[in-house]
Amino acid sequence: MMTIKDVNPNLIKAQYAVRGKIVDRAQELEAKGKRIIYCNIGNPQALKQKPVTFIRQVLSCLEYPDMMNMPEAKKIFPADVIARAKMIMEKNPTGTGAYTVSSGIAFIRKAIAEFIENRDGIPADMNKIVLTDGASKGVQAALTLILKNENDGVMIPIPQYPLYSAALALYGAKQIGYFLDESNSWQLNEKILEDSIKEAKGKGINPVAIAVINPGNPTGAVLSKDNMEMIIRFAKKYNIVLLADEVYQENVYLEGIKFVSFAKAMHDMNEKEVTLFSFHSVSKGFLGECGHRGGYFEVRNMSPEVYGQLIKLQSISLCSNVDGQIVTYLMVDPPKPGDESYELYKKEKDTILSELKYKSRVLGEGLNKINGMSCDVPHGAMYAFVKFELPHKKDVDVSKMTVDELYAYDAKRDFDYCLALLEETGICVVPGSGFGQMPGTMHFRTTILPPREDILNLVEKMKKFHEEYTKKIAV
Image (cartoon, rainbow, N blue to C red; front, side):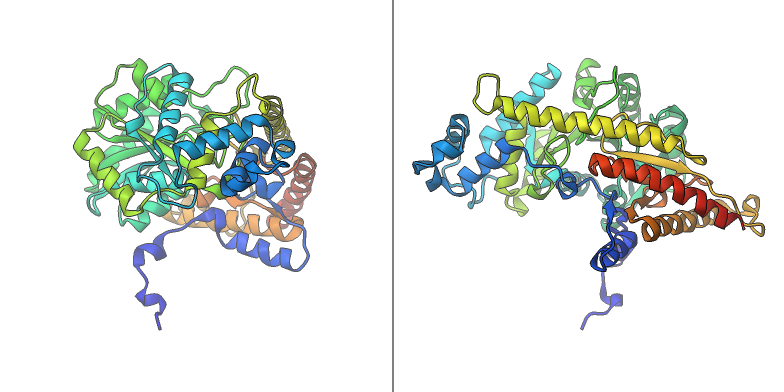
């Protein structure tokens, strides 16, 4: 029988905070009858967001094609749904139960290229697009391609979505953290980037890539185009790959702010040397189709020989799941004005996005009114990264702690806080230490996904809890 000493040590080192010990405890409490408000993960349909009708109707027809020939079909499905399903079957006659080509079904990759061209006004090559099981598999593929040995490192934002730190741990590579500038709406800071890469090189680490999440997870920030251009120049200066995680591109809420892709920014700069991976997913936006595990990555500025190795890597996994490929296609090529499904599709899309916009404002403004808490009202994505303050006990002198001791001290305090919040209120959030944070600060990440009434209730419960918890700590 295997014991823990037989397990790959890289797996033991890997941590994934959004599904960690606090979530395990939440599930235990829920099993005992306690009502839990899950704010730990961006999983919209688990939090009562309804699936988009058009997506599920097309999938239904494709999974049981004989149904389209039944007399009742025309009463159940709009004409454009049946027409779309039949077109997909013509383009992919082997159906949803057969493997596809490794990079994904050709007409879907062509549709994605057209989506990019329409979104950005720039050319896109369908032969540099690969369909994946969600964006996460795309990120893992990119890391597998670029990491050559244990001295290679990837620059990742702090705070970051823990996919990146966990994947680097699994691959035995080095994490090069760079702090986001909380005082400047979580934008990237050039001096911090320079300091981070120079420190890494001083330790013998070889930087090979920089990961950027835009809109931000967990911060909810949306990068300015000027900030993006700085990042591209930085990547060129140090000859590193740019990994652009853009899965929240439709989740932008603040008036006057818009999403700009790194592909667009690079094209406008006429940059031909920086290799770019851009990742997108059906799990976010307004679809929230997390369980269908659909997504893609687009590559720019990569030699044919290297791209061939990337396709070989994808071939090892055969192909991404076909339903996920179909949902990705429907995301990039939705119903158009004049289609029978269009009005309902538009209504559902607008309702979901407007509700997210409302909840981002209510949550952000509500938490900022709590004494000892602060956060940016989320500009985008699905989260708020909330800074909170707690008094120190009389026998604690943080000025005498090393940086590592301060990290450990803050990590225990934010974990204990979030666990107590769960136990007392049923609100499940993730400690900031699970994403990374500046030493001497504490945060938690919460989603904006629960229903409106739960968000309003959450703010009230959190205010009461924080006031009472702070009093206990001060004793």
